[in-house]
Length: 306
Image 1 (cartoon, helix red, strand yellow):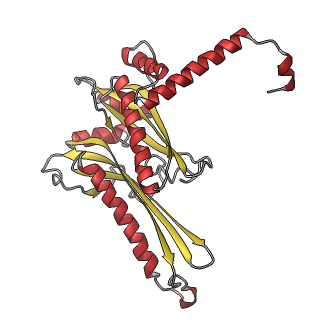
Image 2 (cartoon, rainbow, N blue to C red):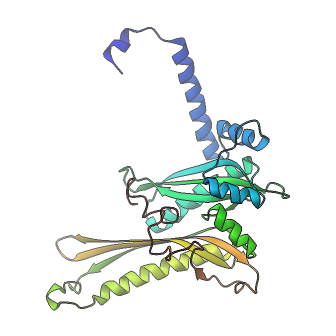
Image 3 (cartoon, rainbow, N blue to C red):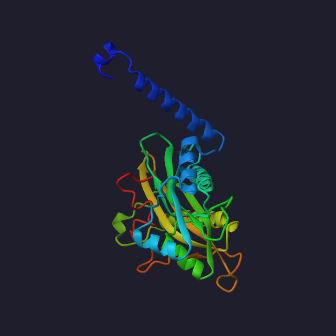
């Protein structure tokens, strides 16, 4: 605030705006505490639902055309955020942050009268607050012609085109599954100091890395088990850090896998057995690619890694 502001008279308009902002902020906090959609957000979503406000979407023009031709009507762009302090466990906290954001996204989709949320982008924005991460989801709520609004809208990372392809193949996207693991390794015996041996595998790190990835995939399968019989594993993200503490090297490794869960007929895919499959888009596998849509973490370089 400027020094000269101390001598200005209070502006009734500014005071009213400030009071309105305080009421809105209080409503948002109260809504988050009680699992409700904030009043202003609900009014916007219900307006889009009823046609009194314009609909919005994150879909491209081509995807909008495909969606329309297959009976999918965009209703509104929806978003949800959870800022979570990890406490003692980054592994548990990471999945918990996404789950809380997913619940809030579904509540917005319900308020919009939607059956599903497509094209969901998952973003993390670290801002230097210790032991905490922002988890943000953004997508397009859609209504399926001939179906009533759902009390439990589907949330899927696939865009409209892939959603339609799946439905035509009798594969129904059902939700999002998340697996995350975070482990420490302390090299007390210096087994990782092998530079002088030339080209030789560091088995202790290979085994450490394999353990983290397997544990993350196991968590993802557990997350998916109650939602369907298969997954589209769009995002695989890994990090490995080395730290020196004066006594021994320490390695911190973490791996994240995020997938859209699907439910398929028994003759399409083995029922009740969660299988890892790749995305349906043309081109190389998305597990190693850099396409912005599915590589949620890899495409987050401007905002920073998690």
